[in-house]
Length: 246
Length: 246
Image (cartoon, one colour):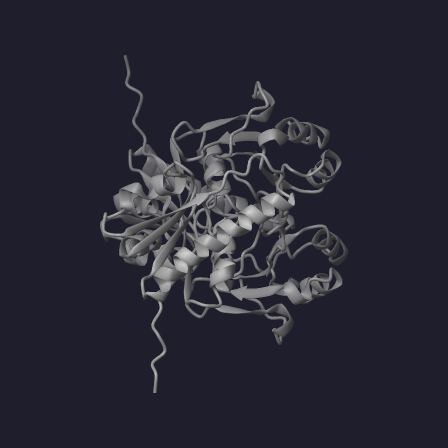
């Protein structure tokens, strides 16, 4: 009788919106226990995820930095982009699987929540049939932003829309008109269009721009007051709901 | 020259989806430091929020249980319900303000995230102009549920809809047809209608029912397999997105 080999366990760990104290107790415990810590980073950078957990690392874990390929010159839906990114994920999966096969647990860090718009999911979908997995939900980036803004987002029977700024103007405007509350993400080069959609939907006076919510250099301002159309990666627009309130 | 009286600070603290280890480090620190801990509960019960923090309390804080009035015999939009609930909030605010005026900080507990469909917001809106406030975002109940289900919710440019099951059948069906991913909350007596809407939208094969995600006695099953239309307060339906994946 041959024994089934004992593999390591994969942990998908949400880090929250950026403030290192907004990790959950469970996330800290599992990160400190893991022999291998994996995280995404741009080539040559330590990366935001690694920065968030810095104070929690014991120095005993092996670090596995997964360096994103440079893809800015290709459109997201181009065959080259898809192929380059798929190859990156396959290589990352092979690196992680090597540790798991050797019986070592791997904690993969994920900014925000691991199952909400996270790169972690691309690795998880390739690994979950082969290894035991534990998922640790995290505070989303958007929840960090509305806490920074100090505005209740959804009341009673409010409908909330979470929508990327990549949608075309007409469709974005129509969706904003049909909702009670909204979070608009992926601003970047879509910023001017998004602001137009918000105005067309009659929501400009309720819209709040938040940049780097809960992080250093956090910015919160009415969207109407934002003097330019420049928005970094960690930014979004909030349209708080206005529902039933006794 | 008279000194401005020093009041206490109000903390609005997200407790996460139910697992006591899913409090953030910041939430635990502030709860353990607060001289007064406030939480909602049904009359005669300890309440779910108090249960979640049980292991974190030091025993030194004064506890302020805010007992919800019994309102089940009135419709949510009836004048009686609104008046009873408004009176309850005003009384709760007076109790909290008495501590704050005496210089004592008050930590108000909020299941999930404090600004996302939380009763906390009703107190916050009445207190925030009068006292300094710190808000601590939490892991939402829905994030706990999709972690329990183990299914990625949103990819790439997916649109996410968070919608209460209280909407009429036609409107709910139409909204579900127009989204990539959805979370349907407030099931309760709306369950049969919600299931019909999901089926009419062609999403029944992707829908997942989750009850008490991250808590004891957690239940996860395909919505299509659920044999009855009974759903308690801590339950929702997830329709994971299906977006771009290299």
